[in-house]
Length: 393
Image 1 (cartoon, one colour):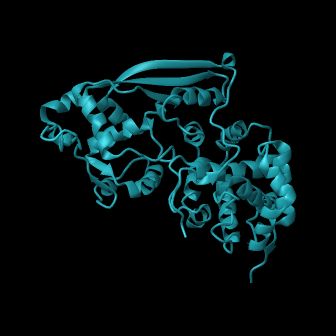
Image 2 (cartoon, rainbow, N blue to C red):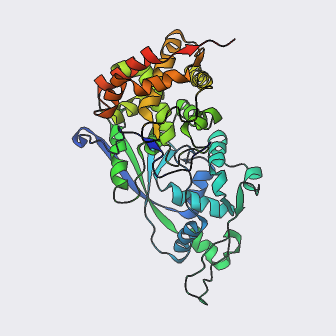
Image 3 (cartoon, helix red, strand yellow):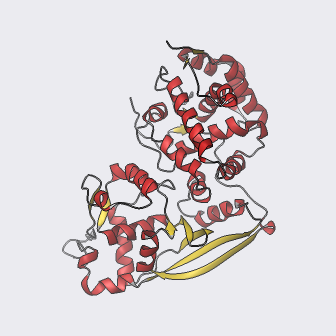
């Protein structure tokens, strides 16, 4: 049975929100631009600005989005937008996605239903844009009429309930309103964008920070990453996490990513965990389709091997999903198959999972300095010793 989402549904003692880099080693180029609203909308429509659905879910409600549109109509300043130049005419949104998507939805005259946003994210990822038949589907969207009812009785807002088509005299003012947009590019070192990660963490400090995986998804967009986000919607994986819908900030995607990182390059691990995962993400951008397909099939076969496990199999002592347990079981189960380029065979014995949780050496390696190389190695070693699988007929 799925649990109710709590503020922290997972246990990740290695969670890091920042990593300091020696900025004197980097050449960062930042150029300001004042794009107007209709230009930004056009950029999104033709793919010059990419807002991959896997970066994060759209989380604003219609009242907050309406306030943004109202601010643009009447000329109030709004926060600047930061874009990362990945290639010529290819910009990824790092900060400002909620604002840009609010503008996009308003000009499309449709607002996404909260319960459908994960599906909309998948469609955006697959299609690169929202097809008209999806936008017009009332199961996915409602009409975007501005919701600007004031708190004071009998005081009306003249923009309330208007949409993009009914702005009349205010439409041109809205379309031509400039939004300060910074385009950031790392000049050097080439093929190493680690400094950008820290830049955007700093940009978001003091507000609602982008989480590490949200930033990675923009910086390391790849076929491998698209595969990760698809795996995150697999029903068998969702069952093991305990929640039917993906985490708003993609922490569950990070767990799958970390599992692969440890499986593929765990022998090269050097603290910190954040840098290790970032480095692996950068490497995974080079994976060819054949490699991505194999890793997807490997993970699916791992999920099949977990078919007899209880929903709480990867919960720790705090009754939250434990990355240390999942990671250890995943690597232990997949290592032999990965070395042979085969799928996982057999079904994990549920009792062996419980034995691992109670193992003294495993618990010792899970209680302190959990991201140290020695403790990670010890946890995986114990899992390889304890986890058993039985063949199916």
